Every structure is written in structure tokens, then in C-alpha cells.
Image (cartoon, rainbow, N blue to C red; front, top):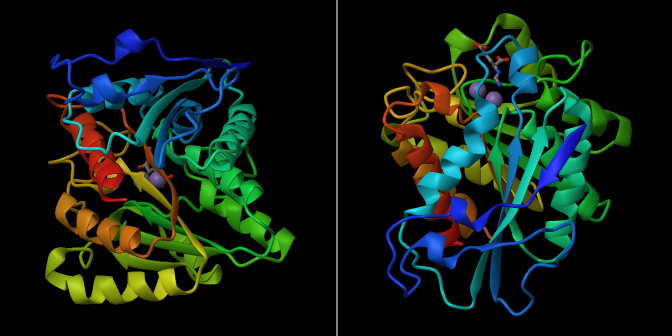
Length: 319
Ligand SMILES: N=CN[C@@H](CCC(=O)O)C(=O)O
Ligand SMILES: [Mn+2]
Ligand SMILES: [Mn+2]
């Protein structure tokens, strides 16, 4: 069984201004099984949590990502609110995987994503293992018309193109999407930014090459090589109708993000991620976002949760 829980507004706490100066004062907690999202807002962002580390466990990783969404929410609550009054920020609650039935929660997540997109809200999904991506992508796909194309941009140290012949896990989501694309005769548009040669074996590089995956390795995914990065990203964006962005926190250097299952000592830095995100936002094609692999158990001084919160803060204020 997996279950849906609405968020207790008390989870959103911080400095009190009485003037909505902070996000905890701006956010509205809604039970999306029973209520609709606010209607009159010009822009709308909806946070939805995926509390699940079953995929990490199956992939032999360090568990703890179940508590990731709550750690991000706590950090986000304290950040200042610069959103327009007419913009809504909703916390639509949490899907919890409590019985190990990962495949069910991915289906449930896809249904919820459809629901948010149909109400014209921009989904911000909080993970949870990177298996969040399979449910998330399916929600976007089910919402769109058949002929509309989706480009996936994954900020990650890993391709996550492992086969799911023994079940879905945090290392298989993009392989599964590629297989579905083959079945549906639709293109598989996948760009990975920050791939580590020391964290993906030869079979994964071969799989990426066989599937026509575009990627930039972590030694080039730096502001120093901004020109090259811009070229690759813009070329990718041009070819698709919509962009789904997924940020695996383990792509960041562990100097910034220790709180993950599989840390990257020589991962990327926040500045190149922000530059790339700005480009994606400017394209007006960004349809949905998730942040995956947050694992508070290994976080130092809440730095990873704060980094995740700052990334979300950036996106919701730049769109
Ligand atoms: N989502 C993470 N996937 C990585 C984990 C790597 C590791 O455990 O070291 C992967 O399967 O490649
Ligand atoms: Mn990763
Ligand atoms: Mn990943």
C-alpha cells in the first residue's frame, strides 16, 4: 500500500512577519484528493512530495530519502517570499511508499501530476529516490497531446539507464522511459548534465550511445566551458516542445550536497546549474520540475536541503 497524506500547515514554520514576507506564510496546504487548486491565480506552483526510498534500497544505495521531502520543505519554509500576490504556492501533500510497492506509487504519482497540470499549475516534485522520474514523466506524457514532444534534462552524476528486468529502482527510470518510447514509436529525448566517468560503467555509456542520449561530462559541465554548455543545451531545447527538468542532488559536489545516497566528491557546482536553468526558463518550454535523492541522514548542517530549497526558490521566482 502507498498512501496520500495532506500536509499539516504546522510543518511550515519560520520567522513570523504577519505580511507574508516568508514562504511559510505564503504557502497554502491543500488536500488534492478533495480540493481543487486556487483558481484566480495568474501563476501557480504546486509542491508535491514523493516520500520513497524503496528504489534506492533496491539499487543497493543508502536509504534515507524517504525523509527527503520533509527536509526540503523545512528549508523552503524559512526563505523569503518575493512572489507576486497573484501567484499561488500550494503544498499538495505527500505520497508515501510504506510497503515497498514502488511501481504502485509511481502510477499514483503520474495521476497526481496529470491533475496538477490540468489545473494549469507548475509541479515542483520533492524526492525521494530518482525513481520519482518515471512516475513524473508518465504524468507529463499522459497530460500532453500525443504529438507533443518532451525533452528530459537530467542534472545528475549518473545516466540512470540500468535495466529494470528485476523491478524498477532509482537507477532505472530513463531506461524505462526509453523502452516506452520505443513501444509508442515516439522519440526519446534525453540530455544528462554532469555525468561522471568514475560513476557509470562501460555498459551504461554503451546504453547511452545506443539510445542516442546527449550528455556533458562533469569535467566540462562548468562555467569555464559555458559557451559549449549553452550550445548543447540550446540545441537540445530547440528540438522539443516541452522540457521536463529533473535535478538529482548527487550530481552536485559533495562539498555542496553530502545528503544523498551516492555522493560525488568531484561533482558540479550550483553556478552552472543556475545558468543552465535560466536558459531553460527563458525558452518558456519548462513544464515541470523535480528534485531527487535528498537524504537528510547524511546531510551536513542541512546544506543539501538548503541547496534544494534555494534551487526551488530560484525557479519559482524566475518563471
Ligand atoms: N539513482 C542513482 N543511481 C546510481 C547509484 C550509483 C551508486 O550507488 O553508486 C546508479 O544506479 O548508477
Ligand atoms: Mn545520481
Ligand atoms: Mn539519478
